[in-house]
Image (tube, rainbow, N blue to C red; front, side, top):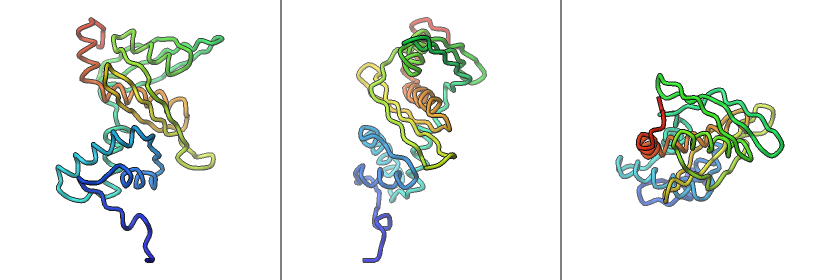
Length: 196
């Protein structure tokens, strides 16, 4: 018919996850299947709220807002990692508004060490899944990482991009914690963890 696939994709409140995933793939974002399911419900909420079709640009903005720009309440800064045998040690700083929170943890890899560091602050969760891919070819490529965490019975994804795949994974984990932040802050306050 002389038209590209993108020209016939329409996303509204009745749309499935396939069209949403395809439009994001055109932007270099290849979501894991469970994230497609989680994110499509957010897009449907946007469509329900507007009552209109959602454009590819609006879908990208929604993904960026809910995942890539999830720097609130916590932003991870200056993580330092040291490996000794099978153990990785992490030290870093969380910025929470004007407050700085020192972190330290250890595990069998960088993500496990960050999970342990959060646990020392009363934020208890497990990693359920991890995916990573390059956003383009060549020396200027960025890594896009997706981390799914399990908070009680709830599963939540975080995502981040960075020139370093290691930093992308650590930021994605922090993004997931931020998406669970109402639980995380409440749990930390009840446990007496120092978050300021």
